[in-house]
Length: 261
Ligand SMILES: Cc1cc2nc3c(=O)[nH]c(=O)nc-3n(C[C@H](O)[C@H](O)[C@H](O)COP(=O)(O)OP(=O)(O)OC[C@H]3O[C@@H](n4cnc5c(N)ncnc54)[C@H](O)[C@@H]3O)c2cc1C
Ligand code: FES
Image (cartoon, rainbow, N blue to C red; front, side):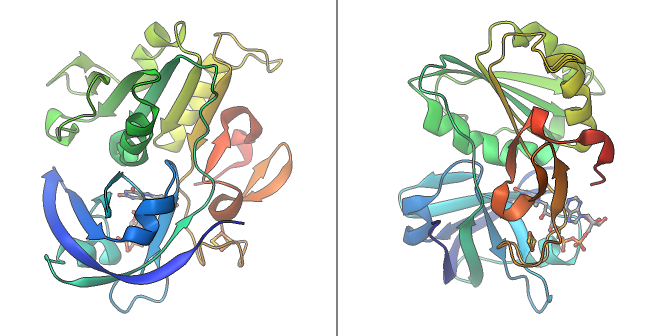
């Protein structure tokens, strides 16, 4: 049974970090104590009827961070909160990433703001595991530039070639797949569709020796707690709710051709 708290928390800082993306820290000992990488929270944004889901980006002591793109009403409202303001947060929610105890080399693929939950994963995986983190964005000012967890091997990829490798993640990822025991990804649907072709063959067999490939899905959510079924996706094990059965799924369990995000 997952531990769910709904609390009024206090914002301790909120700054624009990458182009169009904010890093917000809140003080929340309850979430900080039990949060697991890949889990998310539902945040009440102003007077909007539906809470908005955001991944847990980092946990340090009693502080919890979110990294979010400003895309609409809710995230715009959040971006204007200042130190000392209160925010109503429900969480931590969902099932996060698993790390197999026998795995040594972890490959993390972040498409854009998909880096948000992967930093938390990297922090928890180190120092027991080697972590390679590939971050793909359109241009260099969207790259993650906060101090990275020590020993993370960071591979920047920009579509316009302004920093790091030029291109998109799916074009460079095959270079890193061979050494990886486990693969984790968070990014747009198109990235996952390409990955299914690279990681699993037509018969479902691995082309690369990646034992587990876990992806975090971002879909529109209603309740966020498994009650409304508004976030259901087709999987090989039937319809699953992203908020309660995910948001992390095995890449090969999702029926990608039937999914619309
Ligand atoms: C489990 C989960 C974790 C998430 N973690 C993060 C995170 O860490 N950082 C982050 O920036 N975003 C994250 N998102 C997406 C985030 O929830 C949406 O960007 C947010 O709800 C938008 O709210 P809004 O009111 O600002 O925009 P709205 O006014 O609701 O929408 C603005 C635009 O964004 C699109 N949009 C809204 N929600 C989503 C969504 N869930 N998926 C795709 N497109 C959407 C809409 O179609 C519309 O075009 C996550 C989503 C899920 C389901
Ligand atoms: S959002 Fe309501 S069941 Fe997932």
